[in-house]
Length: 232
Image 1 (cartoon, rainbow, N blue to C red):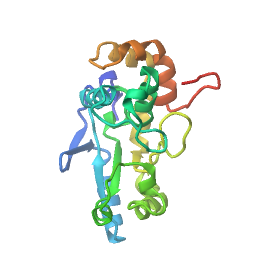
Image 2: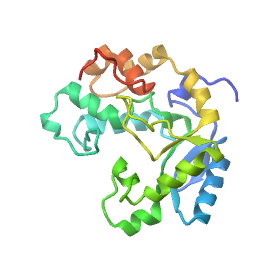
Image 3: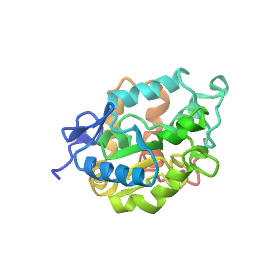
Image 4: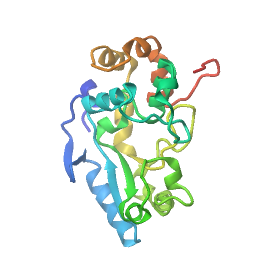
C-alpha cells in the first residue's frame, strides 16, 4: 500500500474504495476476503450481510450531531436507552462515544472495517434490531453468526477490534476489521491531525469536546480505556 494521507485516515478522502453492493463501499483490499467469508458463511447456513461499511467524515459528524441534539437515542454500556434530558453535556459525550466515534476517529473511515449481521435470522426473529451485544450472545438472533465468526473470521484476515471492554468503546461483536490493511491506517493516526479536523468541523458540543480531546483520543479513538484518575 501507498503511504496513508491524513485526509484518508480522517475519512475526508479515500481513493481505494470499491462498490460492495447495496450502497456499501469497501477498501479494494477487503472486498475479495469479505466475499469469500460471506460465501463460506452461506454454505454453513448463515446469511452474513453488511450493516455498515465505509463512512466518511461528514456522515460521522451527522451521526454524532443527531445524538448530541437528542434526535437519536443514547445508550448505556449495557445497550439500554438513557434519558437525554437527565444527562449533563459531559455524560452525554461519553454516552455517545461508547457507541459512536467522533468524526475523524472512526475505523469505518478506512473501508477496512465492517458491521455484520445474520439478515435471515434477524428477519425470522421479529424483534427490533438495535445492534447491541445482547443480540450476538445466547438467545440473540445473531448468536450463531457470532460463534461462526469466532471460529472462522481469522481465516479470511478479519478480527474484532472491540472484543473487550477497556473502558472506552463498548464490546461490538459485529464489528470486524481487515487486519493487515487496517494496521496501516492505525499507524497513520495522530492527535495533531485529529484535533485540527475537529476544530474545523461542524460538530456540535465543541466547547465540551476540545478541552478534553487528548483524553478522548486515547480513551476512545485508540480504545485504551479510562485512566485510573479519570472520572465521568
